[in-house]
Length: 188
Ligand SMILES: [Zn+2]
Image (cartoon, rainbow, N blue to C red; front, side):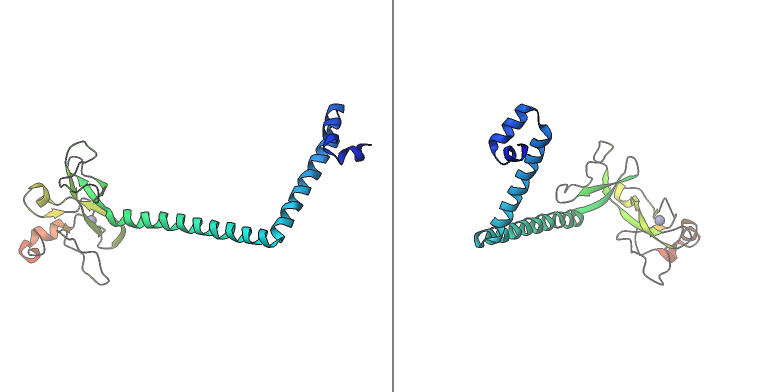
């Protein structure tokens, strides 16, 4: 009797009303299998195959567009990002120069005390480091004298060169003070 009822929609109502929940669940499972099979048959038909291809191509196009959009925006953002130093705190912060065009730029401390940083890639013992120190040049804030990196204590100049293989590290403050004329000309 349960099997026979399970074949029809009336059966669901009858079984549920009768409290034969297990039979109703089994029927729901059969119904699901039936619909899956129906879907399978649809996608096997010519119209179904076309639909499947459209869904697939549409999905790939959407995915591609999303990936392109994400990377494109990242690349654009990276190209427009510069490290500035907040002269009030000495701390570095990032500036989107496609948005902020004034120097000094608005800085995290609240005032317009942001200046483009020079990047120092040297360590105190004259080795290259991967994470640069953002340095505020004295000349940017009207201070006299050369600028030395707060981290490695080496000379930092405008357009501070990145280390290249075999390059001598810039002089430390002590080396510079011992013979300033030797190091002048590269910066200010
Ligand atoms: Zn340094």
